[in-house]
Length: 430
Image (cartoon, rainbow, N blue to C red; front, side, top):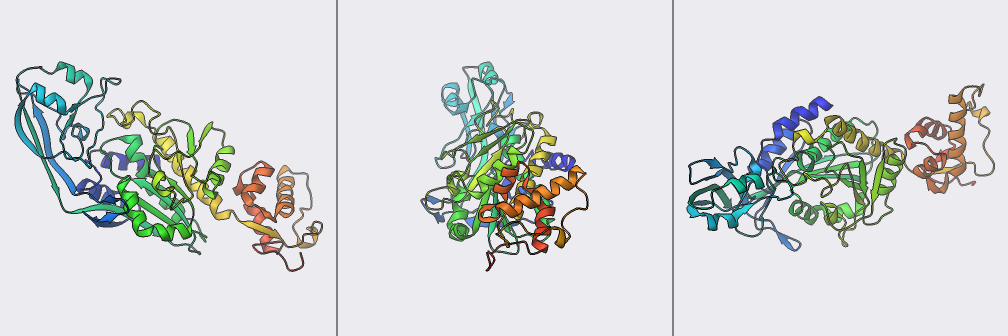
């Protein structure tokens, strides 16, 4: 998996992405080699709640020529050099005018910052502070931006993976940032590989909804079309972002704070040896703030490694391939896959013999010897299942009481169901 992640990272890295345009389409077309993404378009000017889908933006070339004839801030060298959604410019200006259009990060003098202007018409370039300091402070500069703003569309990708029920688990990631590693590419790469893992699960209970969208406006547009259906069907959901660096896992809870999404992740993390961190919901960050807006209040959290804002390279050119760890990124795929399996197995089960424990030996469920630790552990799980399957505890609760992973109960659970000791409805005789 690590090699696949790196291979597709290298293919996606050079693409100049924004919230609309050919860069998003190219990105989704490449990801479609991993997962069967259906590519969809939302027309410019469409009203989506309090927002309007903006014009489509594409850029062919952008750079600055210094008074000495040196070409700098070339978008083909690093696509962070151009402020996203910059208007076309072909002009010669002096330093005093140019400096009003230059952006840098004083705290990271070697980094190119990431700056956007989606909803206000302007233009600009991003350079390192060190390069800014070296520029001549007099003379004329040639500024060239070959970009286009037109009525077109906003592109997003969707996969609906059917299950036995219409109840859904939802995954969302964004495909709208230019060349950044953890903040951009880790999310769609992990989600695409996660699709493969979940698609391979037999007898899926849930339907799975995966979306690859431009951040904020994409989530808003998607909710304007699908939000009411999702409000009825989504039982757990996650925004996948910042999952590629070597940091500890961080989980940002849903707005509800105690949703099934939260419960499954916290259970998973509590069974891992790695250190982890829990965060309460706040209406900032990524698209969870749209999914968790008061009208929808979907059970959507976000399992990350080092969160946005909390690593120094965030939204700069230093969030690059050298910052991420493909083994950790692969482990992020496995973490989300494990959480999906927890959700699949989890239910509120009912013991069909509520008065005293059933005779396990007569049902062939009691080992002939309990001298082996595995036999003792199996019986302990069976007894815990039967005792706590009272209609008030789900399987995650029982695993938490027992102090082990939900998935370790699979064998005992299936045996109890097969022997008609557990069911999803209480017994008429209980």
